[in-house]
Length: 206
Ligand code: FE
Image 1: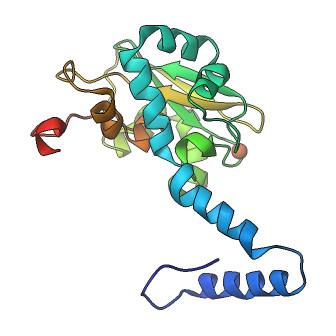
Image 2: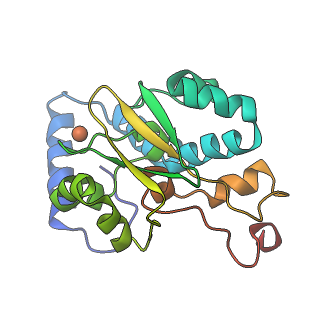
């Protein structure tokens, strides 16, 4: 795949280039198709999509209700579907419940909504320990969950992918939907972080 980097290319990048050249030469793949896929990953697919869903749910109670009842349909309302996000279940964080997403078997993840999974999500350590000791894992992410809060762990699979609807932070009551969107991080939608309000408030920084 084409590199936009000025740095010397890594072994893996060179190997990918060699394989790409060979596949094009043999007529197995079309360079235009590769460009479409790269463009999709650079501009269309990513956690900004999930952030839009979360912010919409925060400002629109009817949408939030639909999202929690039938995540797949509500997400499709925003034009977001496909790319491993065909069957979505959205789980809501509240003052009483904290949700955490994992794929214990491999790395199932809603690509269209969150982009490519982070390396730690695919690691054996995370996959095995998220279920056995979720509070310990969350602590390592800097997230201490009080004892009175229930931690629920959801195991993604090839047919069903989860998205955490994080709690809307206090102090965001006057923020626009666009500003709220900018606050929502990938990890908050996996459940390994909470959404934070930057200081000073994002609207003053913007
Ligand atoms: Fe998986």
